[in-house]
Length: 174
Image 1 (cartoon, rainbow, N blue to C red):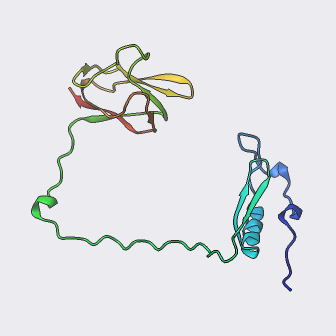
Image 2: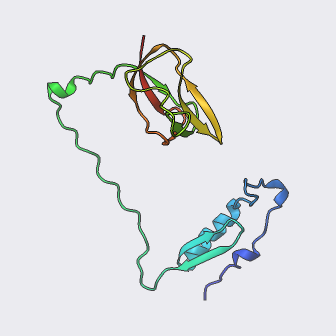
Image 3: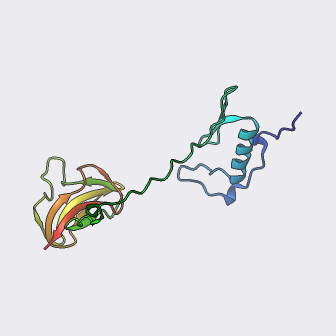
């Protein structure tokens, strides 16, 4: 008969003073507890162990006779083909300079839903002119053009989520 370990609930607990809490006030899972859970999953042939934020646990056993999941093999690397002379020529870079988002947030083309947009394609802009708003952390941040030029393309839809550094406009410098 095999010797079984004590349940995780009886495992040693580290002092909470040395562990930082997350933003919601919960304690992060200790690496030792995670190792214990992995050993239990292997020992008892568990399909899943789910921990909730308050320390509760849900365990799912593997069905009798169910195969153990195996990672799928990686597909073979693509086969290189010989490029024709037309394929070897690089594509010309698109004209204009990109104006990128300085924040993660929501992009707005206008100051209010019923107001006209700050700028449209083909419109000339001056350095310092507001071209859009990016709402970040409930603050409306006016984004200004970094140079004089003409709007060639608006790369984001109104009220769309944008990432830091994501291009918003393509502007042709004057």
